[in-house]
Length: 311
Image (cartoon, rainbow, N blue to C red):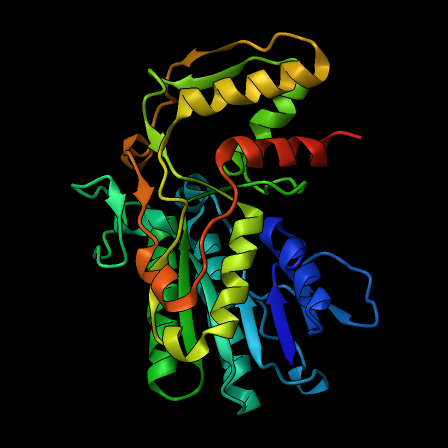
């Protein structure tokens, strides 16, 4: 089995690539950064927004994981052409490369739970219709539609996995407003105050990166059940933002012995309304089709992440 992984140096990509190698896969890892190849991992430096790469030199994939992305809704708003190039055109280039292999692999794309917008019910399901409220989410919806059409053309099997707030792993996010939990852990270890907007009552579904990787592996093992489908996955447990920060502060104090303050901060001008919603994910349909279930509760996942950030 041979896997292509884009965004292989990112938060999910690093973990997924390692797990695939552990499972015996040969992996072609794509990244804009230079990486070191190993016996089981062939590393390719390629910016997906450029179509100038000779794929004929690569082994054809059985499965493709598309993780590369520009993840900031605000950066997308500030530079729309660049965002379209990175999040839409790059994906189209990848799909075209897959089509030209003629092998009909399984392509798994990562989406966002925010693509359904401000739902009336805080519990998000696979049945909620698309209602993107940011240019970032518009791009993600476009990815899903391109993937669905390529599936309909018979070029590949496509599955989209929409994620909530992902944390864990030791990588830095490429954007300031992403990787919120990881950033707060780093701040807490330095003794800096942790802040939330308004009253901190907004509810989030925090999913550890290890559970994300397990979900992606389960997609490979359930190809016939999930091909052509879109799923949203999460823990099914909602946590108030201020409670999550309080738990981070508590665990940091246990490690450093220093008190970490937690308090409110005024929302920035131009903050998207989607950031004020409550969101809990119902993954029951995905669980039924794949058998996957999240294993790490927030407190346990935070403890694991603290261990990754400390010597």
